[in-house]
Amino acid sequence: RNVGKTKLINIPVRLFDGLVKVSETEVKELAPGEETVVSFLYTPTHASIHNITVASQRFSEEINISNNIQTVTVDVNYK
Image (cartoon, rainbow, N blue to C red):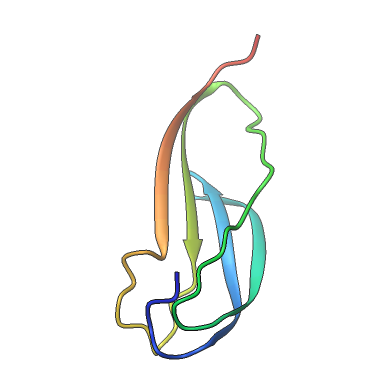
């Protein structure tokens, strides 16, 4: 969600497994007050606990960066 007062353009959004970037996409435009959903398709290569993080780039105009990053821990098991 863009909680600022400036339209953001070409926002890079990255997916990490631990510290390794595994995918990246771009939000073309996000007006003030708008929000969007970004989806990634990713399959870890091994069974274990994975810390998956989605992070968007910080812009100099941003006042609140608390919604730029989200991490979840998942337990991947293969059968």
